Length: 355
Image (cartoon, rainbow, N blue to C red; front, side):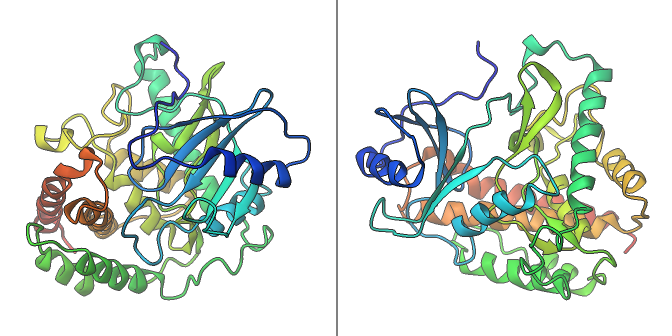
């Protein structure tokens, strides 16, 4: 079995006009020749990702999902700009080649970037890698090291000082995600009222040192070197990136971090090998991050609960499209149950919290 990320046939209803894309790219990229093939990366539940294979070169095309979209989500222009400018301070961004704002071509804006061939860890670490627990720990710490490095990037030097407004970031995220959740609610979804009230009441001040916030930093958005799987060579999915509180970003990441001792229903949500022998627990993750960043983190319950609520908001926005028949992807049918489980997890954290 190949360990590099594989594509499959394009899902029904998500086809693209290959001849139109080919004509556009040959006008944008000098020396591009031949007839391309197109296939789709099956992972992901937000932006759609396709592989374009020319005889001598490979590209990845990204476009927003079909159907209802949150106003501020799926910003192709933002992701394209970040890939081109952040690389100077964080050399793990794929090179972006073209950004198309003409929605008449394929029905939406899109951009095209280089394909970084490598291994992406999803639910489990492939047995072929033969990682020992010690190697898994080292990889986990490298994953956190890159996270700290990103948060310490001099974003002004990269020309990204206008990417967001760090002041008032925490308040905007709480009010913004409450608003987005309520706009996407369906009759069968939980209300989250106690959690929303707690998040409003316990809101901390913004972190004293703002940074680049990835907003989706997970193992399945990280590319490993196929010749040395212990080395991270790329980081993907930058469309939600902004400037803000790095501890809020840490909360985002820990919301996805299912550890080995979590209950069986929680394990069903796991999409990365965070439960593998040698992986740090959430508490160890936070402690190692704090050590590497040279800071203290005394109230992580708040950031973790925020991350869980934000994840529920993302899940509910996707489920809203499925509920209203705007996407036929059957993976989304159970997202409302996932939402309810996230609410239960949040309430458990709140009930044990000393905040």
